[in-house]
Amino acid sequence: MKLYGAIDLHPNNNVTVVIDEQDRVVYQKRLPNDLPLITQQLSAYLNLRGSSWNRPSTGTGWSTV
Image 1 (tube, rainbow, N blue to C red):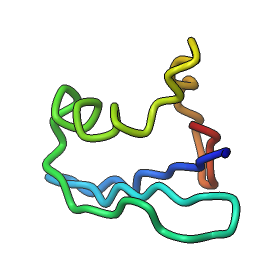
Image 2: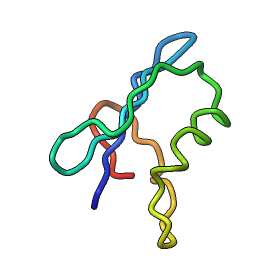
Image 3: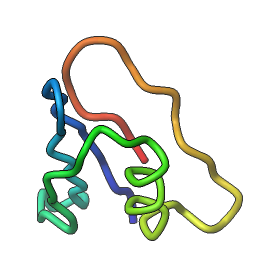
Image 4: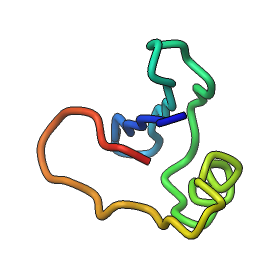
């Protein structure tokens, strides 16, 4: 199952969302802009078959996790 993620950045916090292939929200939370916390929160959604996080893109849109 593919998951897609996006982070909407604000000056002090962000809204992080992960959706599945059927556009169902599987994770949505407002978090402080703290990279270790964000990666810890999203680590449960990392494909455990040897995949890694994609590099962040500049601009808007969804990125495959």
